[in-house]
Figure 1 (cartoon, rainbow, N blue to C red):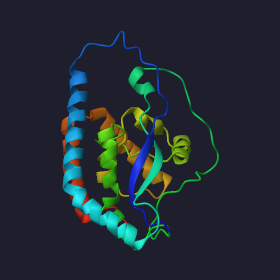
Figure 2: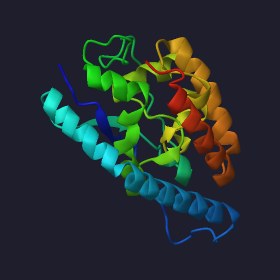
Figure 3: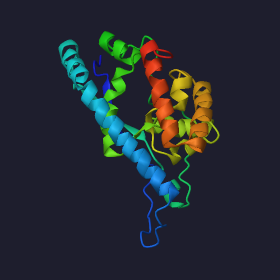
Figure 4: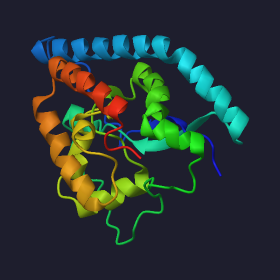
Length: 225
């Protein structure tokens, strides 16, 4: 049984596109908004790591005392589709009739230790992903990244699912504060609607609003198990 519930993600982009730097557009409103949001992510992630570091050290010690394996669990997830940033074409769509070999976590999951259940209920297992934000692999706010085989499966089941990859994945998001953990494809289908709504109206101010609404969700353990 794995006792490692504090997790970092290895975000895997769909494909890196060739970007011509010689004809880069002038620094404009979109560039300023991007720079503002990147600065916001760095500040929030840095402050979050400083504030949470004593708690993270305590959790790490408890994990070592109560279970085997490393404290931090790394997992590959599908991240930003960089072709969307460059306007590159191409279609990497693959067809599959098989269900994914990777599975979602479930209530009373046998893989989760008693300590891990507590961490999941309060979403404390997400804290190490702040390091991914500092690296630039993730944002604080954005669609949640999915495991590769589950991503391929859901892309076949849900129209427009891959459009979530037009922005960097996030630790929290508009979908996460409106709905709990996924248990079915229908749950994901509802979340995709929230994700695409967020993508249409994304901004630094919108990110701040979602961050503020995330705290009550964590404290009340809404949608967690």
